[in-house]
Structures are given as C-alpha cells and as structure tokens.
Amino acid sequence: MNKVRIIKPHRPSVDELVEGVINGNRALLGRAITLIESNATRDQESSRELISKLLPYSGKSLRIGITGVPGAGKSSFIEAFGTYLCRRGLKVAVLAIDPSSTVSRGSVMGDKTRMEELSGEENAFIRPSPSGGSLGGVARKTRETMIACEAAGFDIILIETVGVGQSETTVRSMVDIFMLLLITGAGDDLQGIKRGIMELADILLVTKDDGDNRQRAAAHCQELKMVLHYLQSPTPGWTPEVLTCSSLEGRNLDTVEETLYKFRDSMKQSGFWFTRRRTQALSWVQALVHEALLTSFEQHPAVAERMPILENLVASDKMDPVSAAKDLLSHFTYPDIS
Image (cartoon, rainbow, N blue to C red; front, side, top):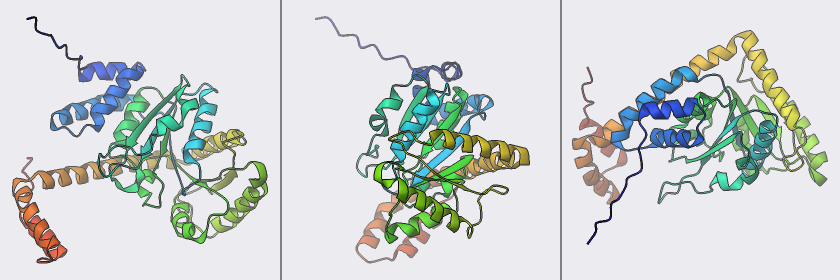
C-alpha cells in the first residue's frame, strides 16, 4: 500500500518576509502580519526580528485614526474615502479593528466583507483584526502591523477602532491625526461618550450629509464648532475642524483629504509632527513593557498554580478580590534578564 506523502507549505524565513514586504508583495505582507499577531512562543523572536528589520523602511505614511459613536458609519466612510484615495493613485492600508468574540477571540463583524468596493481596488490592503479585549478599541499588535504596512509602501494608513465609548487614548498615541465621526440626532445617552472623545479629535466629521439629512447635518456642524470653543485642542497650534460628508454620494471627500494635508503641513512646519512621532515611539516602548510584564506574570509557575485556588475562593465568597490579587502578586518574581 502506497503511503500518502504530505507536503507541508513553505514557511518563509524572516528575510524572505522582509524582502517580500518592502517589494509590495501582498501575500507575504499578509504572512508577515500573521507572524506579528501570533501568540505562539516559537514566533515571538521571529516577530521581533521582523519588526526590527522593517523599521528602517517605515515612517513615511500618514497615520490616521478613525473612531465614532455607534451608527456613525465608520466602515462606510472608510470604504468611500479609501476608494476615493486609491483612484487618485494613493496606496491605502486599512487596519479594521473588530470587537472580539468572547468564545473564539476572533473578529465578530468582518470588516473586509463589508468593504467590497474598496477590497477590489488594486492600491488597497484591508486587514481585519480582532481587538482581543485590548483597551482603546485597537488590536494588540496594531503598532507592529502599521510598521509592516508602511514598509510595504502604503501612503496612508487608516485605523478603524471599535468605537464604543472605550478609552480612545491608545489609538490617539499611535496616529498622527485622530478623526471622530458623528451623526445628527444622537440622544443624550451618547453625549457622554462623544464629549470625551471630542477632546482628543483633530478633525470632527459629521457623516450622512445626504438626502433629507443635509440641513440637520449642517446645523449639527455649526453646533459642534461652538462646542469646540470651550475645549482645548489636543494638538498645539491646530484648531480642530468640523466637516460634513456623505459616504453614499461621495460629497466632500476631497475636502476631508485637503484638511488632512493641511494638518500635516501645519504640524511639520511647527515641528510638532516630529514631537508626536517621538511620543508615539515612547508609547510603544511602554506598551511592550506592560505586555511583557503581564505575559511573564500569567506564565509564572507559582502564579499559574495559585490562580485556580484563589479563583475558587473568590467565587465562593471566602476571599475578597483585593486580597486575592495581593496573594497572586506575592507569588510573582520577575525573571532576571541581566
């Protein structure tokens, strides 16, 4: 009886991935991001080496964070705006962050399937990633994925957050420009959400400026401009602009593009652009340290052994959560890395 020979698919080396990414190979870019996002221990060193080798080729893209209240049409705007940019000859990468399933940890909504027109553009690359429970509505490896896309030569990186009222400071710390999408007629239950995010936004965009909604969109735009007088700008030397647009009709997409470039040029002239980039790098260092500490804590043998015992004690009301946390920390010793 003949044995069936199973041929394993070729696993590209780090150098092959680097070469493929900087040459714009979409398949190898996807493989590189998969390696970056991997939680497998055996992939960690390769992932770090990959990022280290891609970093010299990154940094030239315009990094844009996009968030918004529920129903603001983030995906619709990104598809319309991304398609518009691609047809102007720009290369656009979309990092679409979906809520994570609590069961599988996978993406719930699948943004790539919701952006069919943009997916068909030759100059577009869409990478949906589950948030994995990360704070700030972004994926755990968004920074590293962004570096890979920049090294692949994309002119603009659009990062779509979950946008459900979480702390948006995480995405603010990794992008050059932060855009907030708003809609008319949002009830008082959304006001508390959008007020906090408004204080972080460089550009406020009232969407769905079409049909019978045009007059209301214009009125809401004026209201927001008045509100901004009482808020401090997150970017020194820049007064946040309020615009309207229609993803459905493509109205004012050119104005949005012009405002983005206006912001970039103004910030480069003042020098704050480079200050923000340095701040982004420092925030990345802090995020990596926090992640390393948490991973080391969770994988510590004494902690892993003690964890289920304390969980049972807390669940049965025999120990309070504060005492349980102190108990776990007392069993943790960070490994010597000197």
